Image (cartoon, rainbow, N blue to C red; front, side):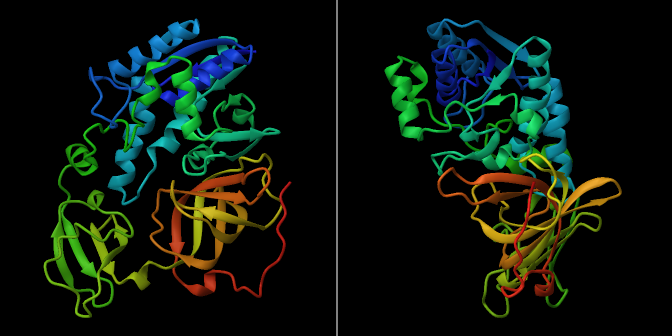
Length: 381
């Protein structure tokens, strides 16, 4: 097969390219220039898309003996990822830009260009596995990235390859060293790639500006403080609330609600964070067809969060595919804008990604959840 490998300049995508070559594919490497003003050097493990990263990827391609190109996707990345990230925070949400990048850049814009140029598949260095065309967790659960790939459709997965998903990170680094790749010890990227300083609040402040509002108590409704913008808060946040006096009961306060229209940030005790049901929009059924009814599954609501048992029911609202997710036990700190990813547990083959949606609303009423004595078996086709 003709395989295009997205090479970030890191160890994971470098080994993915090496494995694709070793498998006998006709491989071409491509580095995505996603920044309109790429820095010459990385800041340790922060950021990506620097000139240094492009050079690292090119050196790996030279060692592997494959053609290598740099494609400019900076404008598309700004429009589809950065601008959406800023708009979501301004709307009181907590988005995951890696998920959006996979959805709109790597497996949409880049994959479409690859197909137009005659490539059969797009390979990346993501930690995930494809088993019989189904997306499943990686062998290395600590590095698993199936959560940020759950936005992909079955058609997109049909053109995808994840060559390193069956190996733990330690083996990937050892393999890179054995192949003589200088990136073997390169630090992993952390934080948000387009915010190399790691200061998300400063980045958002520069793009959104000052939009003052009030911090109010969930129980009394009293104003406790003022803030400069809802983009400085996320559901479940405990620190940086700007509150001087402790709560009357002495317990810590958390952000429990954000109203972007009024600029009101509500804080309260941990009990106010309990969520019993989730409504998700922009639903994608990664497994293929939409389930024909409610399905019992597990949900993950943060990239590195745990799993909770749920019953998920697909429906439509104004023509948009949605998912109603009823929990069997409450979750805390569920933020609008994040993804709710549904898994079907499978101990032998790795958890299957069933589908996902962006969290649009939550309900704290226990009646909206599921009672343990009301379980029915779910179905998916």
